[in-house]
Image (cartoon, rainbow, N blue to C red):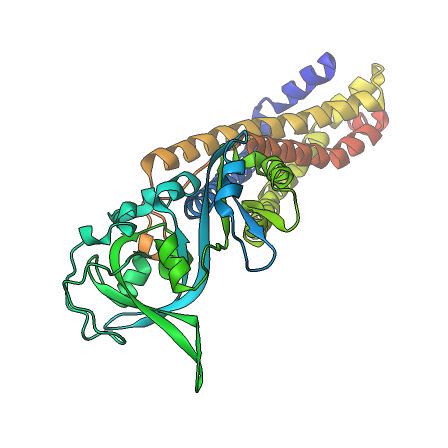
Length: 428
């Protein structure tokens, strides 16, 4: 292979009468480099978006939840105590999740009401770090947030402004904008799970004081989720000591399935069941994965187009070097030797272009990550363009580019190998 490599490198050197061929070679290298750079940057940005989305989802939700078939999930404290000592468990906390409606002086909206235990919820979900007004502890002591206005203009029971027993509620920023309220204001929560009256079901209603607002960056959460204390949720939905489930946080999200099996063993299986964050968001992450695959395939066509330049460059070299090929064959070079010369030349073009593209892609991603290209959070719900450079994805891009470059050498190499010495020396 040393001889073939030596000849291939000599073919790539520029000479006056082969300047056009060398230009095509440079264009081929540039085409491969551009394609590899585009692939690296796009895949890194999409991986960054995927990671950012995962962080936001796992910030407001647990890594896994323990549920129970039926509606009577009592004894949640005992189940949580069995789960907490397990390896890789960072925290476990019971919760209630139910639907309802919320109204203020200006608007009304549907929402999901989540009852949590403020003391233990921080170990199961990261909602505390997303609160940008108020405090999670205010759910247990809403009197720390003074009322801003009298509630006599709200529907339902009239409550004096000095009433200290109004329970607290934490709402999302988008819901706050919709209702036009701030901490200290009072909103009315309605539940369809009311009592049966003479004219049919009567929705249950209760006033809640806004004690905080959170911003997760996910519109669905910021516009639909509200948090109240677990005891208030049990009273409001008439659930007694029952809960919806137990939220669990693990130290390694990639081992969540193994932890799920351990929890199933501890709880004894049926009637308890465990759902991981992968199960609850399967469709979302499957769509993101599909998008990455489609983008990879589409951008690979850039490298594919560049491979046609490699074919053109090698064909031009074969035509120009016909005499040299004939001399090599006359001196005993086999068809395989000639074929390998041009295959090495094409692969070298691909390797050089891939190396330049990887370096350019890495530098561009590094620049993007450090420069923090600002985005409009009102539109994209993200402050800057996220970038995550994955070595595995870079390796896949490099492998694909070199493989395409290799396949592009097959036809010109076969044509060179078929060239007979007499044809190369006919006009000499």
